[in-house]
Amino acid sequence: MFTDFPHVAEGVGYARDVVADAIPAPKYVKLACQRFLDDLTAAEDPASPWQFRPDLAEKPMRFASLLENIKGPQAGKPLSLLPWQKFVFANIFGWVERGTETRRFRSATVWVPRGNGKTTVAAPIALYLTFVEGEGGAEGYAAAVTRDQAKILFDTAKNMVSRSTKFRAAYGVEVGAHAIYQTRSASKLLAVSSDAKALDGLNVQVAILDEIGSHKTPEVYDVMLTATGKRRHPLLLSISTATGNLAGIGKSLHDYAARVLEGKQADERLFAVIWAADAEDDIWNPATWRKVNPSWGLAVQPDAIEGIAKQARNNPSQESAFKTRHLNIWVGADDALFSTSAFNACARKITISDFEGREAHIGCDLSSKIDLTAISLCIPERQPDGSLHYTVFCRSYNNRASVDEARNAAYPNWEAEKRLIVTDGNTTDFGTIEADILDLCRRFKVLSVAYDPWNATQLAQRLAAEGVPVVEYRQNTGTLSEPTKEFDAAMRSGRLHHDGDPILGWCISNVVGQYDARANVYPKKPRNEQKIDTALATIMSVGRAMLAEPEEESPYEHRGLVLL
Image (cartoon, rainbow, N blue to C red; front, top):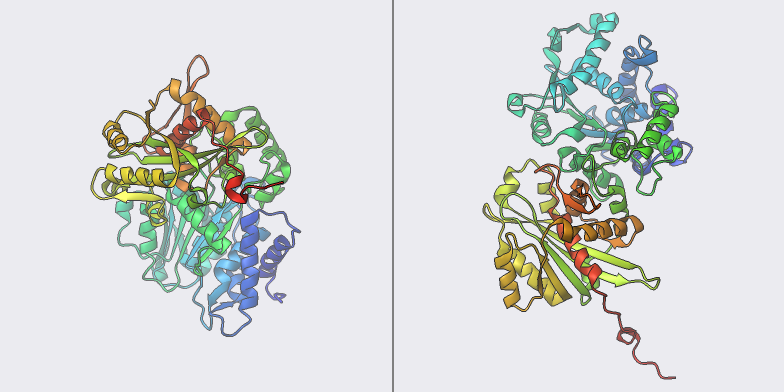
């Protein structure tokens, strides 16, 4: 079908092999490949708005083969794209609006572990779209958190151009100290960092957002996205590896891409693919390493990963780095107390209404201005084997001023999803929280509402006046150590159940442990911007639940009295 276009044929072949399990690949790569193949079938219908043009996809890959590798053992040799890279190129450049050459995808996001050749994908794309495609006055940008990070991609492109006399001569491209430019078309490619104030007035043809997982704020992304509005078919390409920055724009983009691939979010203008370990994968199994590193055995050497994994397994302080860099797994604080993979594995398809009428305990962690405020409902249940399980549901709050000023890209999404309740003004409205607690007390048999007297005494007094069983629960090592350990044990053993609350997950990932001489642990946050309030409220509710034996459900409630 694509015999005249060998690079495209290899990219399409990669997709087919992944779907057929001939090439090991994680969930979201399989979904991306299936989406591509389904779109090819759909495009056979003339009524489809999209058309696949192999000739347009082949051109940038042929162009890339004219460039040279500049690093590693292949340095100085012609650049040879790998099958997974050709799959990316085929998608970005091959899909167009039917009957035109206007590209379908205006945004693309590629997530892959370190060392697999992200720059090998990004640099030729930046050069092609800026200088080869023929867009007049094209502006290309390599954007990152720091100028040094941005220059990694820019310097790669710069070195590729410097080594290709034919490219410079054919397209009139010149290399300067801080820019690559083409005088005849007034086009330029340069590096920019996260000083968003210096980015106004751009007219972007292509922006490569390098390592967007490290971007703490959405400013650069927002500026670049806005600056693409004047072009016919610009491209905003984010390419990155997962980090510990769960509240940044990168995690938001990653999760959005996952929803698109899962079919939960419609976005025909976004190309997305994610190489990352699946939730059920054994991170120490070499088969996992292979399937999440698409350049396995080539750019990524198996013996090197094996050595890194061995060190990480023997040294827990290195485990987070191994997960993010080599398995593309998001983690929280570098010395996080809890396992995010264990927490994610505890997610269930449940709603709070499924448990109404049950015995429950509530934990409250209150703040008035900057931090989150949270309440957590914990429903304990003793299993036939004697183990105690906990099902938790959380409500997180903040005030409008804090949300608008926060450098947290996830807040708007959480508010839209009704996970984050935002009250007006510059302090969180405790009246809203009081009303929610009273509502829970009406719907459940609430045995205790635990609160820290700091900042919550007045609320506790009002609740007590309403007959709510409030319990003072000071947040200190002596009070929190055992509940924290039990919460961790419940997560790791699968005795904890939750509804996938992303705010709880974020707070869980941020908790670090402060130990005393007797191995008691106090959960704390490493930095002010890494909130843990929803996690603390949940630990408090679990702490109350572990002390009280849950009521045994009468069998007669459902089947009635049986006479023999």
